[in-house]
Length: 283
Image: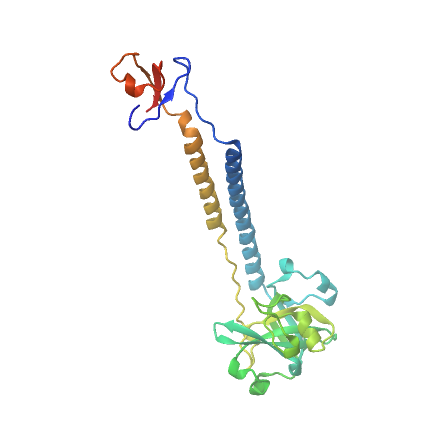
């Protein structure tokens, strides 16, 4: 037997050598894993197409001229897919005595969003996120000069309610601690009726002197789906290559047939049986 080759005895002289088959369960498991990885890659490609379409829709909404907020009859049909980030306008009078401060971290630093009910002439109410104030201006008495009293029109971006709280933090209405802009919970805590199921992020143009800083809405959609897809496809390719090398490579290797006389000089080394005369060695 050669030092590096694997010796397989021929059964019946010159017939082909038998190739060891892999366990059926391992082959099936490997093929299933490859199919799953390919499916995940295709799914990420589809997600990428969906995300790009979403970004395009939102960009169009943000930069469109401001339109009046949906009429109350349309409020039950409002959804994130169809309405979030629409550029809207709403007119009414602020109820400053019922404002709610929601903890926030912005480009201006840590502080609070100031959510104030805006009561319209038809008696309906829309919550308006007037903007950001730092912690030292939490007390409403420090912002009286920036609180308009009369009729006012606000323009901004339409946003959906946030009923599930913030990351690892839930709102505690009874202690007036708010971490997300949950419209229904805020309306209940402030005894507001006929409130729209959305709120409006006021833009910078709606800011009054000394009032909260508007226009800080961050619109960002992570889009790493192409990287994820390439990763899944690469893993599928590597697993398929490993499967081929492990279980299929032996089928394509050349075989060298050696006819060894029964009494040849290397017979004692090459024989695997008392009558062995033909040996197959992979090359």
